[in-house]
Length: 121
Image (tube, rainbow, N blue to C red):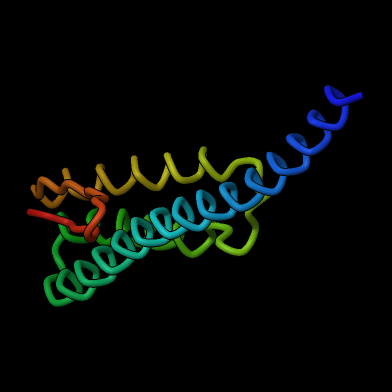
């Protein structure tokens, strides 16, 4: 009897603690992804504006790549945490970002630290 009661109490307490821990983890992970995607969007929009001034063949390829990155970011499902291809789409955005950086001859490194996120050049 004591074993059963102890199990039930432990199970209830563990479930409550697990829900709270899950919420904290989800909030932190969501904030990291949001920060990363926001940084990519700001980067892409800024370079898009800078390259609009020069219209040669090389820049048109860069602008098309930036347009593609911006489109991918705008289609990203921010509001749906149950989206089953979230990680897959995020990896595609990261890959496109790396491609754009390569085209622009920029070495970019997006780091997420405990203090703040940063994009370094």
